[in-house]
Image 1: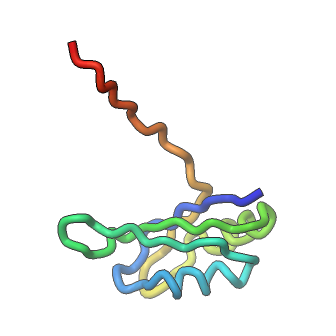
Image 2: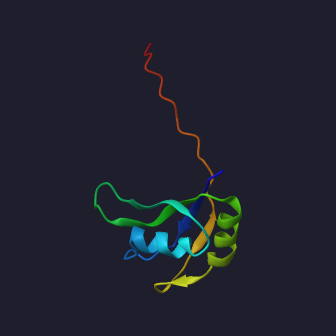
Length: 92
């Protein structure tokens, strides 16, 4: 089963390709996304990587958390799904 990983404290210059290559050392990367600010269109300094194998994801997390990349110490851990608010269209 695929595992989603949060990657924080990234350099604003890191590309999605560089992020994918960094995690590909540990296993098959299904996706790598850097979050972009809607207003400024600039990276927010964090992103998500989805890896195919749980064991590869665990290895990447343990090896990359705290590692310095582009002058920044990465924060790497398993992503936690936040519940999205549900909006009720019924107005009283």
